[in-house]
Image (cartoon, rainbow, N blue to C red):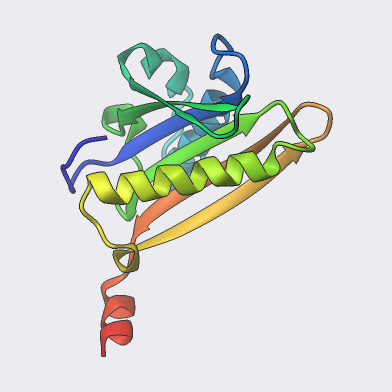
Length: 160
């Protein structure tokens, strides 16, 4: 994440106690969403695969609990990874702890949003943040966090 406000970002992360656990699940979920965006925009993009871009990502880690750590890969959403215009960032977080991991994922999402807003020099009232949770029983829990530019009319209504 850098200080440029015009760049869109993709993030894939995992909350885990294993520092070598792959980011595959969150990368696959993000790939699915990007393909869906492309399809909605009138194109079919089977060539989109977020996992192929992970070697070029910036990696971050942040302790969530004494045993669980957020491992996060962030990359610019450019070219085939481009997000719809209103999106600033899309981050997918997963954990194998599909029952007890939910609060840890939400805590990690809060850390990411706070740090993202700080680094991009945005105020919380300038953006719309949406968290979409998903559970695959006995497999994983995921949450996709979207950060979108707040509509100008909404900002005026709040300010006026």
